Length: 213
Image 1 (cartoon, rainbow, N blue to C red):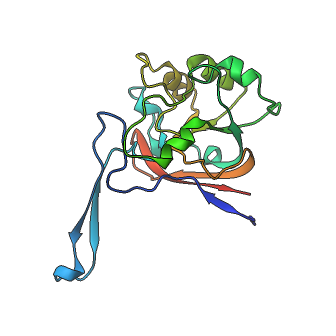
Image 2: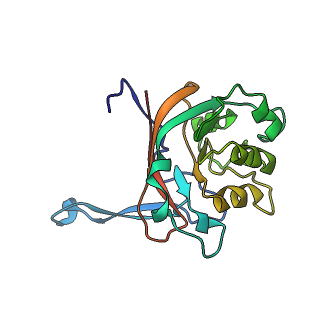
Image 3: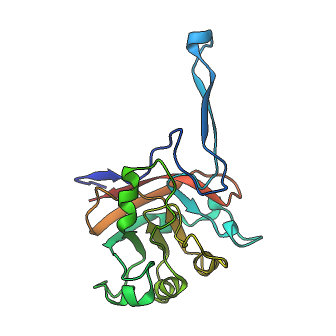
């Protein structure tokens, strides 16, 4: 593949990176140091698999379902639409999606919202992020989408109780990519490469996500 430009839309993993409330805090430390006599520098990391830019697996919300290592590779690489959307309500609904001038068929879609600006100040967790409500999830399912990405730590609104959006998408084998940094990305068509760590049976995994033109 020949590309004119590659964009890294992953959030850097660093101490102090904000995580979902209640998730394990990110810890990075050096276990071995050359400066202290070791033959090599070796670091240790402790974190949730849903830290920063990551993918969700069906087992994240569906007991007994498949893990991150079984996600279909053909869903993780290919043409993707980046759509800028600022819904009239708090979250993306089916009516918002109906208003978009989308192609008749598309398999992957990433939503750029006002969430992207939250990465300018990552000193605290934002609860007022834009998410996708169940009607939006159902609309996307009806249009055959197999991968959906969004520019904050969850595709589900913060105050939900039934996690209906996650259940709808994951039960239909739709790949969810969360925590994207889209500040430098203009709407349009790109080639997506979203490859999570291959952690056996895990409910999610951090990922390095690239967009290419």
